[in-house]
Length: 261
Length: 194
Image (cartoon, rainbow over all chains, first blue to last red; front, side, top):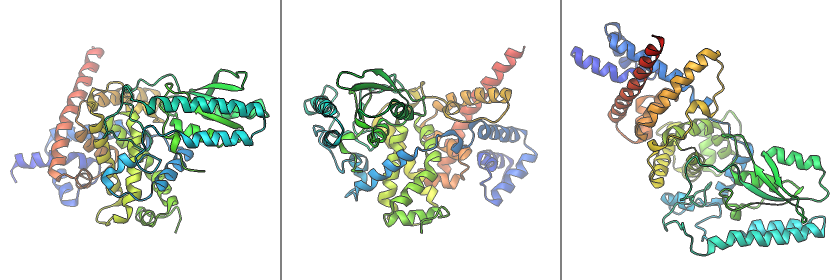
């Protein structure tokens, strides 16, 4: 090999010389060349600097939240077997197949109603009925009619984002999604506080005469959980009779089709 | 059997026989590496969860078809690469035109170094981050897999489904760009020192 070809080969291999993955013959070639080539030695320093500056990949990312993991696995398993792998993203909607966009949020609704009827007070039950009707209205309304930003037929719908936010700007996240929440009337204040603290929520309005709180989620940036995870978490709380995202405050993901507990 | 000592291969076999606990374990094992990788390629924080979910869905569905010709990690990163590129394509926005994405250092990294070194490292990381943003996603993938994931160029070629020579070429172009950014930083430092 000529000196020029040698230099070229060595120079190309330096990133993998530095990360220690070259095979023995290649490593020897680079080492031999480095002895007489200051340009390549400088390149070795550059590549070491790149490793150092980037840090280890694992250290950069947040750890997964256990609830998030549970939920994802639940959803994936509920998906069952797909006929065609390439339709994966389209079929990934948690409902088990493509969902017509006008489908009502039946489970959220029936669950809220059911828990309300089992719940402790008629006032709360009445609040739930009113709220649920409202929820159905605002969820059904824009979805059943023609939407101004209706996605094209081939738009992907995925596990975590059932509806592609075609109009949303990257990074332009609103201050925090708003929730309507009804707590069990007998729930002590400290329990309500605990529930809100756990999800990073702040009461911004309420309780109304029907016991409805408006709660804003203010988790620290980069650490917030997807809204569906928060909603799911809250719905598992026995003290929470009803919780629903207020439309427009953030995109709610797939609540209409969550798997049964 | 279900134990934390299961190798990746064991986990994949269990996933192939439809054990949800194995899927959960594998996801937990790979989550942070995949998160970092997908974020660096797409540079779009809002796409990351979605891509990761799609990756795990694909793992669940295709685990029994894993032939064992490559390492499990190579197979999974290959899926992550394809899903990332797919999500960029369907998003149809140019990822490099996304100045708002936080640099990796701002994401989470707990830094154990002393403050001065930490500041220098942050500056370096910021400069490199901006330079990385100007690279095409294919080049970013090569850089990431090499320097942050410590993979050989042959493994990277297998992940990205291209010849090893293409990996080297992409790295060649990426290094030129990164080198230019660092030279500019040095130059700035020298002028400030004067």
